[in-house]
Image (cartoon, rainbow, N blue to C red; front, side, top):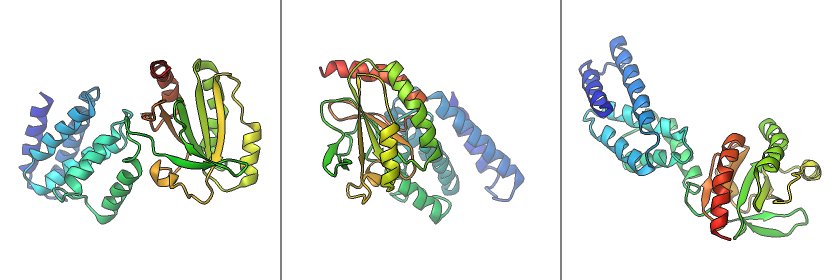
Length: 272
């Protein structure tokens, strides 16, 4: 039903002549955008494969190039900031299949470059993919490949100068103390370069739970390429990795982390 309504809306908008400054056209575009948001909301529980197929249908059903560009850009924008964890894969698919191949185009060069950067910063850490291996430097100077194999890991990229990170660091311990009853390693990866600030953080950050092991690393010279591999263009960033190395959580906030922990425990039991 929603598919049919969207197709009718597309036909009506095309009938306005696509005059960019025409108020009637602008209102029609706004109405179409509202329908698109309702439609993607209606299929929110479907798989990524189903969502990419629906996007292909919607974009492919538009023959006018300007309208096709608009629909594709709207869908990309929605899935780029998708409310469902993992749906960023739909945005990356749309970029690769439609924009990169020249079938549709963004409104301007900057928008296209921004979209390309988003895809490059996120395509390595989609749900189900093997977590990229990075070499973290310990406080003593030694290095270790992260995440470690055979354990459930949380990779938490933070900076002591980041106000959101500071706030998160005050609440994260209580979440892990109350909700974790299986072996879990919290990898605290400092994204800054202030050795003194890092030392102070390591001294004061504690999680009073025998199931939770805390490890501290940094990479001030960015030799491991973690900024690109994990998309750390801002902090905090949090991922969860299963014992066999696959990503089971990304873009995690404290609330979504807490919701994911029971599933992580179930996965952990499978690899005992």
